Amino acid sequence: MTFDDRLLIRHYRQQAQAEKQLSQISADVDNSEGGEEAQRLFEQMIEVKSNLVSSFATSSSYLSYKHDTIKAVINGIQ
Image 1 (tube, rainbow, N blue to C red):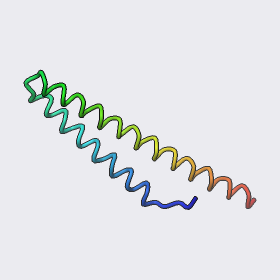
Image 2 (cartoon, rainbow, N blue to C red):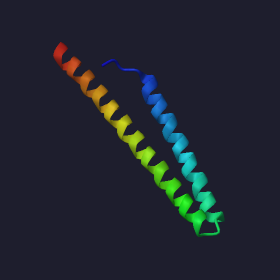
Image 3 (cartoon, one colour):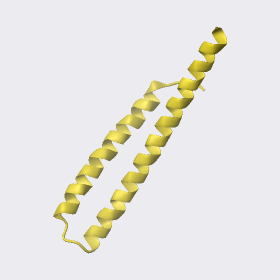
Image 4 (cartoon, rainbow, N blue to C red):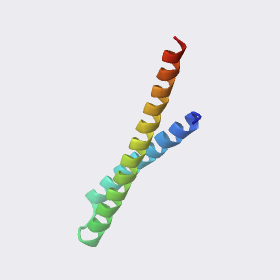
């Protein structure tokens, strides 16, 4: 597997966008009138949070794999 920093950059960008979406949804919740609108906002929030968790997990796994591989190479050289 080759390491491409663009992959992490893309994930970090997606995480920042998801955090902005959560902020917007929170602002919309404050202005909502309840009922159907509140349910829709709640569903949006769950979807955005799920995507955010997935992105964090992917970034973390990729970074951990990258560090472990680099560590193995360094230990193999010594």
